[in-house]
Amino acid sequence: MILFFEYFFGSQQRKQQQPKDVPMQEGSGSGVIISNDGYIVTNNHVIDKSSEIEVTLNDKRTFKAKLIGTDPNTDIALIKIDAKDLPVITFGNSDELKVGEWVLAVVNPFNLASTVTAGIVSAKARSIDILNTQMKIESFIQTDAAVNPGNSGGALVNTHGELIGINTAITSQTGSYAGYAFAVPVSIVQKVVADIKQFGVVQRAVLGVEISNIDDKLAKDKNLKTMDGAYVGKVVDQSAAKVAGVKEGDVINNVNGVAVKSVAELQEQIGRYRPSDKITIDVLRNNSVLKLDVVLKNRQGNTDVVTSQSSSEVLGATFVPVDAKTKEKYQLEYGVEIKSLSKGKLAEAGLKLGFIILKLNNEVVRSAEEIQSAFDAAMNNGEKETVLYIAGISSRTGKIGYYAIDLAD
Image 1 (cartoon, rainbow, N blue to C red):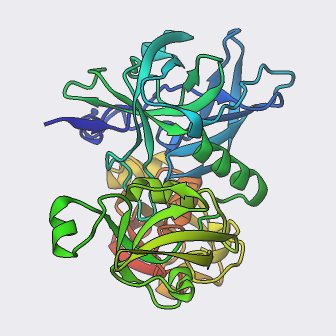
Image 2: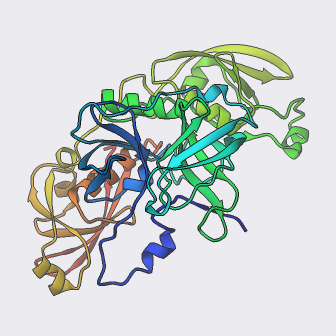
């Protein structure tokens, strides 16, 4: 069985096998400078749950980096260092890539700085099901350029030296390079970065359909005359697709003049737009092609711009890492304590001052930043009902508590 690794801290299983007396870990990855004033693109999984981010440039200068924003749905993160006059990579056009075209991976495998490997594009719009989010966009560039631990977040460039992708994952049975690597196309990266800079959060447009790829069995069952496109199994009420006239059983095969042959390709095309954008889609219905005009909506079902909310404001609390004395008292390795409590979701649910949050949605919590990350993930998971599941312990009584906070109320 081939395993897909969201490298390059090692697999989740390996992280769980760390000794109990070493709760904090260090990891390394790569990144791409996209502006001369210090903006850098990397993978979300490279910096996810990091309490501190340090960047070492090719000239050996080291900087502390600030996290600007992340998008788990595409595994992209934007960070920034305080620097000027940095060398900047030129953006290419990933849409123009051809299968068989030569590409280069410029990365830092095993902490070996500025390593370059070459390969060809072996596939486009590849979905490998590694992103664990509701609104994931997996339309990877597949290449056989050698990619190894430490390469995640690094540049995939064409023969003109232009950025055409961000290296993200490998296929491997051992954890090291074994033939194929996958990169997020720069067409997606540019949209994500622009949204984070402008709005603080990615503006995700949705059609409001449940779709699937077409195989031979589905084509025969539904009497379809094509194997290309995304089959519509369900249309959500009051969605952009419903308003535009999309029906169950339609096959969507074109977005604004761009042919789409699979679910991954459709998701990639829709992912380039924002709520309120107007597009035209082609649908195959009863073996006839129809053109439909669509006004895209956000996941809440309207065309408003989505803004990043502060978890402290919504939850009505501020947080501090649990101190060493309390850790020793309750034999804890991590946790974040409620420092102040006002009107908000936590007080409404019955949480008290001094409650130590250990996990949010089954993810370990070590800092206020991780609470914000969990909050953002819950608010942008593609569902209208957004819930935070909290597990923790009272620092005053030692009583364990479990809570479900509905953020949509």
